[in-house]
Image (cartoon, rainbow, N blue to C red; front, top):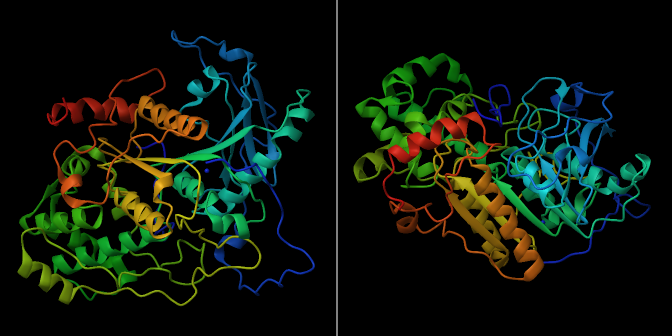
Length: 483
């Protein structure tokens, strides 16, 4: 349904200027790793789907191209168990863009994705590189390490393919969904001090990203416990969701998810407030966006993110739930709802590299332009609010620009919106002129009917996918607020 497949807790349990630098952790003075019990993820076996590939297809020409897409250098291979792709135009501008893909599911085959703005990059002289990561499931640690490792090997790979290149003058990173998490973690100071492969990026563009790391999974849990409470089964064991899911669903929806019952309307109000507050596109996200069933499908997990951790990391103890306009109902809901508490140190700092689920602490000092669709109910807009709060708390708010996009689903940006965000970041990093963005945390601003209009570009180009082509006409027909 979406280009970035669904995480599932039930099956998933559910980069101004810095010099490009790299170093490896480890050494005589480093502490010995803390012993770790094997995780389910450690026993899983993965393999590159195209292990023998040494190149890949050139991008099809488009009428607006000014550079022949077939003249690029295109290299494929395997590095550290992960497949990779690298593309360098003949007129390379010396800048390298690392692309981090979204969640790949739980299968054993490792696959690479080309960046959605590939044509723009090549037409403007940028090289790009992307890793499959060496592991599937929600393994962001592997995503950061393998993306960084590939960046560090760029010139060696080029030389091995008979095109010696200098070190990139600038190194940027961008990614979608789980790849947004990879992006946010890779630029964070914690990764600069704990990763085995360390890279200093010059700018970043996380898109529809999990910018709250484990907070996303807390939100999934909050969605579940409130659904149970409003449906009348508040205390039913959290992990036994499958036994009551039919009852809860039928109590809250006549047709899931677009036609709620009267009781379900209360739940949707709570859901709206959990996922970013009253805002445009929420109703369309439920009615036609198609992303909420992916979140609903995460319910009932054990909190280990499907074996990425050994212990439950879920925490809903800090949530206060609101049914808009119903103070008494909100009080009753908060009194009845089940609380989910984490086990201590479930995602602790480690001495052998990044945490199992790397943090996005907002601890960076490079230009970051982040975009998110308002109707996303799988990686909700609230992830941007968490990202802003954490970044401001670190004193780094001046380095973050956020933009709301009037999309109705998960990552359903037009290529034009993504290109605009990327070039805004590049101009900021190159010229020192900070681009405009949106206030994502003031409730009245977010609730305004025109919120998200400023950076939404409904232009459909040759590289836009089926979801965008299908949804944007529906959004336009049901949204008269933007001129």
